[in-house]
Image 1 (tube, rainbow, N blue to C red):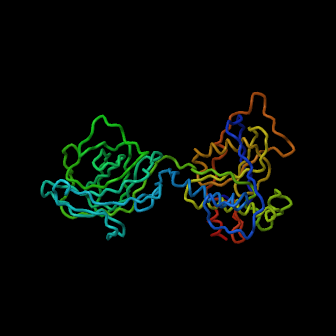
Image 2: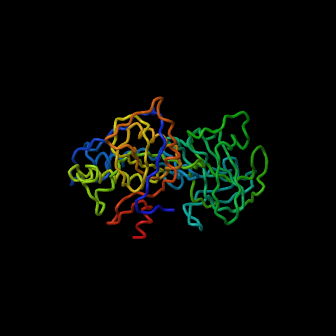
Amino acid sequence: MSAPAGPAPPRRAAALPPPVAAAPRRPRGGRASRDAPTARRSPAEVPGDTPESVELVGMRNVLEMAAPHLRAGGGETGPAFFPGAGPTGQAAEFGPLDDVVMGGVSESRMSPTSAAGTPAFTGVVSEANNGGFCSIRCRSFEPKLDFGAYEGVELRVRGDGQRYKFCVRTDAGWDSLQYCSSFDTVAGEWQDVRIRFAEMLPVFRARVVPDCPPLDPRGISSVQLMLSKFEYDGQLNPSFRPGPFELPVERIAPFSSAPLTPRVVHVSSAGVTRWNRPGIDVAQEPPAVGMNDALGGLLTYKLAGEDAIRASGLPYAIVRPCALTEEPAGAELLVDQGDTIKGKISREDVADLVVHCLGSPDVANVTFEVKSTLPFSEPFVPPEGGPPERDWSGILWGLEAGVTGKTVDGVYTGRQVEAEALQRA
C-alpha cells in the first residue's frame, strides 16, 4: 500500500554501539561544464572530479563493471546465459552431440525458432544400431561461469511429456565427468524447471561415479541438454519415445530462492530531489539546494546517478543521509521517505547502516532518508557504558519500494510510489 504524499512523522530508532566499519567520505565536487557531453565513457576517460564525472559517469561505469558479478536472489533468476549474454557476456552456443559417436543414427540441434516462438532442442531419436540418445552441448565458456552465489539453474521449457536431462561440466575436456539431473515435462505446458546444484549426480558415460565431490558451481565450463533412452547405471527412461521430438526453451539462467537483498547500496544525499521541486523555500534547505547550478549541477547529477542504479535491474538500496558529522555513532535516528527531512547524522552510523542494508530484505529496491533526532546545536555524547545495540530491522521495517521523492514534469511524488503518483497526476 502506498503512503500518502503529505507529511507524516518519521520513525524513531533505538541506539547502538559504535560500529567497526570505516565512515563514508564526503564526495568531492568541482564545478562541471554545463555543456560537457553526458555520453557514456569508459573508466579511463573520466575527465575529472566534476559532479557529472563522479556522480553520473562514474556510477554508470561502476554498474557496467559490477553487474555481471552481482546476482539477483529473492526467488528470482540471474542473467540468462541462453538465449541472453549471461553474467560474463557469453551466450551458450549449442551444437549436437548425438549417439552417432557410438554408431547410432539419431540427430538433433538447437533450432533458433519453433512453433512456440522460441529456440528449441529438436531432432529425431532412434534406437537403431544400439543408439538411443540425442543431446546438445554448448561451447566451453571462457572464462568459466561463476554461479557460486546461486542455488541452481532454472530452465523455462514447453514440455512434450518426456523426461530430459540437464548436465553441467566443470572440466573443458570433451569426454569428462559431468553432473546431471533428470526432469519430467508435461506435454504442451510451459514449465519453470529448477535444477539444484546440490542435487546433481556425478556421472561419467551414464554411470554414477561413487565418492565424487559435489558440483562446485564456481567454475562451470559447459552445459548440455539430453533426451536419452537410459537414465543412470543402466536404468531405462520411463517416458522415452523414439522418433521426432521438440523441447522449446525460452530461457536458461541461474536462480536463488534466498530472500531478495540489495546488491548495490549507494550513499546519496538528503535534498537530492529538492533542486527542482515546485514551491520550495531554498532559504530553509541545505545550501546545496540553492547553489545547485553554482556547484555544477551537483544534486542534478547525484539524482541522475540514483536513477542509473534504479534502472540497472540490480537489487539496490539508496541511503540519503542528512549532513554528515564526525560525532560518534549511537544517537537516536529518524528514517523517512519523500526527501523532506533536514538535520545531521554521524558518518559512523551511516557506515553501520550501509553494512546492515547489504543483508536486509526490508530495504530491497528502497530509497530513504536518515538523520539523528538531535539538533545541530546539541552534540551527541554516548552514555556511560555505550549506547544500546541498534535494532536496524525495526528501524527500517515498513519502508516502501519505488518511493523516490522526485519531481517529474512538475509533479512532486512525495511519499507515494513514483509510478503510482504520476498515474494519479
